Length: 88
Image (cartoon, rainbow, N blue to C red; front, side, top):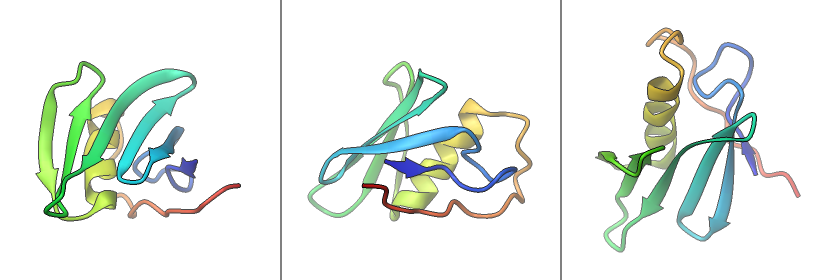
């Protein structure tokens, strides 16, 4: 599981779980936010809570940030980047 970042950062309250290599699912307080699927060419495809494609990204954190901003519209665009940490 990967916490979405410090208080006030994009993803605040969103927890990202790596279900398998290249596939991440986000939720906030038990509510599904979306998922990210890494493609064979290295791109990350992001999908919202309704499985609608949000975009293709070159890195995981940009995909996470985009989904977090869509799920939490009150977060300012200039908020700090998402910090990834592995919890075992």
